[in-house]
Length: 286
Figure: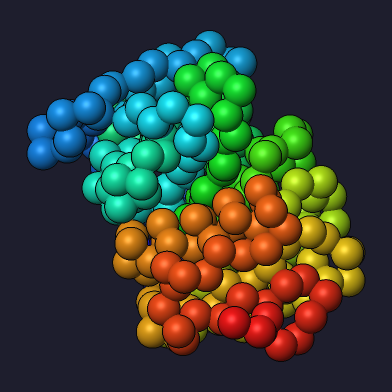
């Protein structure tokens, strides 16, 4: 997630608003250009193609689920890629989860130009694929950083089995200097989206995140509390903007226990991880 530094640079030169807005968009979406490849990925990883409602054919990456296990749709951050998500979430695959790593328009050789509406349409196409692959098993949606904003947009349009966000902000413009906010072309109004959620939501945030401050997570937690949403925040004291994949896998397993039995399965979590249900201000008794 590179927006704060990028917009700060542009804030000093505001002549020609359309050109500045276009330049900001380029920095919001610093897309890798090399086409997706299976090189270096596990042998069960495959390239998959989906078609968006506006006619784009997009390539992503998938790993199959073990019978009966959930499939996870992963929506990556602004400077990442689908292949990177396969590597990051390898511990989740090892537990038997299926992975569908979405790749956006304009990223990794895919056609199109990225923007907020387009990325949400891309996520819808990959959600359809994930549901097809999962059959009767659940599909969880995980959004990291900017991908959390995409995931919120997806949740506005579809009822999900569960939503997870990692290192996600209240709104995109909150990360930009005030002088530059009007030049940020996409909004990603995540805090406002919280009130519309009709699925369980699990908010994950590293307290050492220097890209999206932990205060952003506190505001999202407060919004969920005021709206009476179902779910909890997972506070990770030792994690930064990119928590360890094994830790994320343990959190998703804990949440799966909650979804299945009503109680969090915490045996795989480090002792310093706090689970604070929405509506509460203190961690649950572990």
